[in-house]
Length: 287
Image (cartoon, rainbow, N blue to C red; front, side):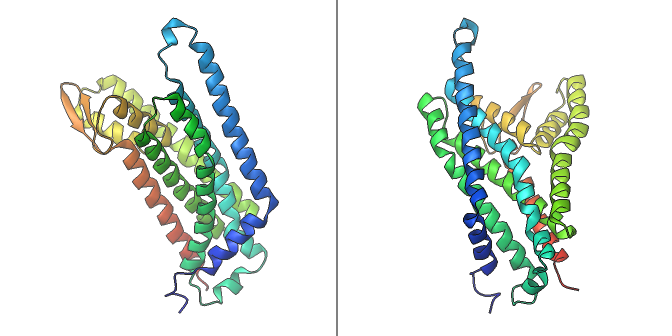
């Protein structure tokens, strides 16, 4: 019967744990303070730069929107894996995981409940930033489509980071070890591997001058696997009047169509997160 009902008691328990802790609200307050200071700093710096005639064309709304997006990207990349890493390893430390596995709940539902609770907190953080995003709208030059694309990218990133954290938590018995492992995997995936792949690709693109259609297509698709180049290329497509779903990039004398970089990013990171959840559920099986 537990497999048939949509109600997940693990989700309910984890959500209650989250919102009964004082540190959750401290965490939310620090997050909003950093976003607010970053947005204010971007406005102040740009206001000073607008005194220079050659920089007066930079739209204030765009800069504030980019600052909020980058701060959220950094915040989630640093904290989401660690928050997820203690979920299963913490149950092992408290010796309550075997009790959970003895219930009618399957390991997949246990992992899904823990994932959903943390994902709900991340969505709350996204919603809490809406008043700051409204300021960029008031400044102009920001479209609804840009906000929706940025939100989709952040949610896909959260799915992947939460999945990696839960998988690391299922691998080890200590919450501290799981946190270190999860953050190491994220650093490897977002910094080390992109550096190893991105530098040769950039040099290759500069050497060919992006004159070959297949080379331009390859570089654009690979760039969509990292949040920063995916966001930059998506914004470039939007400003150039190209489609967000299937932009046709000018490469040499041709126009090469590729999936939108943000779409490549969202699909890839969603699959990574779901794959990690599947692997974590398999690791939690008794026996």
